[in-house]
Amino acid sequence: MPILTVPTTAAGFFQLDSVRPGPEPRLSVAASSNEGEGMNSVIVTNQSPVGAWHHYRNNSTGELYPSIGGYRGGNIGFQSLALLHELAHTLLLIPPDGGDPTGAMSRDNTQTIVDHCLTAVRQALGN
Image (tube, rainbow, N blue to C red; front, side, top):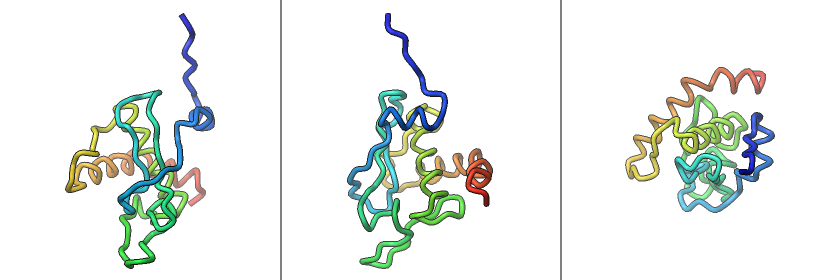
């Protein structure tokens, strides 16, 4: 039986190519994942040039994208918390929220991530 090597650091996780850039039809969505699949999950970051991963607002319409933990889109703090949100889905630490058309479950899940991770993200970023 082959031994499964589980990454124990963020660098190890990202070396598995588990995070990939990709298209996201909803510009206000920074990242998404195939929730609950653990090590086989793929987290996709929204690489639209006008999407929330890169910007805090849609330059075409002026629409402001939601912030996360006080960080606006395009900011490393925003991106870090968005990735932690998706990683939490893959590890079944937060419930799936992709099927909720109101976005309420995603906001609740994001708040859970902010409650548990914001201090660590701020410390890591030096702010």
